[in-house]
Length: 94
Image 1 (tube, rainbow, N blue to C red):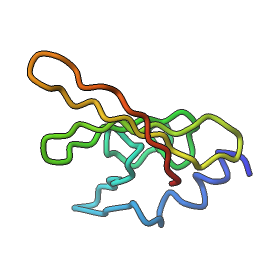
Image 2 (cartoon, helix red, strand yellow):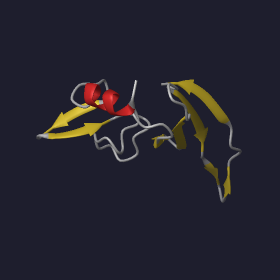
Image 3 (tube, one colour):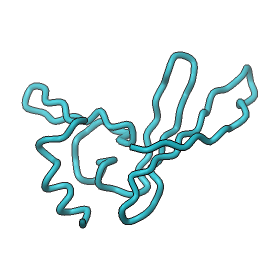
Image 4 (cartoon, rainbow, N blue to C red):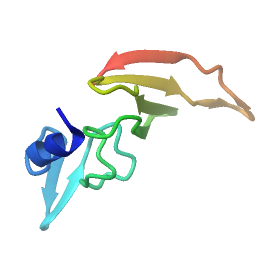
């Protein structure tokens, strides 16, 4: 399925969509801007990235490139003092 068709089918109704005051926002983990638009959509664009803060942990989430791939790769970017923590890639599925 093409990215354009996928966006047309999901732009007004998907699990990550939040409608507030006539504006559309997205809570998708791979949407760094939280704006529901074609260019920043983590659902339709391969290689999309997102950053999440979970307590004291900073987690980078990126979608694995591929035509029909919905796999995501997460990396912990937490710092320990002045030194970055050891980067441990974790795999998941969107």
